[in-house]
Image 1 (tube, rainbow, N blue to C red):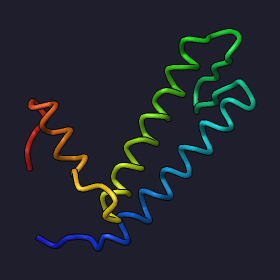
Image 2 (image 1 turned 45 degrees about the vertical axis):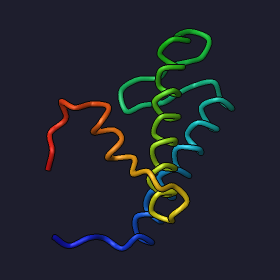
Image 3 (image 1 turned 90 degrees about the horizontal axis):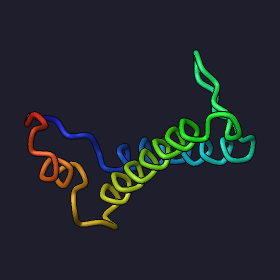
Amino acid sequence: MCRMPQWVIASVFGALALCAAWGIYSSYSTGTVYGELSQYSEDREPTAFFMIVLGKVLALIFCLAIASHAVGLSTMDPITAIKQMLPWLPAP
């Protein structure tokens, strides 16, 4: 099986982390989350707004964990940890 170089993994997930951070910043600065078919405002739909921002925060944490593992700052593999916590996920 061919493996991707670690610098590519760190670059891709670092870029995704920057996108997630920008999304969180723009959501809180405007108070509105825009989607393709929906728009949630912090004033009108606070639960939906905060759930979407929470999803962005979780994506940010995941991307940072993958990037830090690829660079060598973290010894624990996040994918292996997730598979151990959620045993019903399919194994490759």
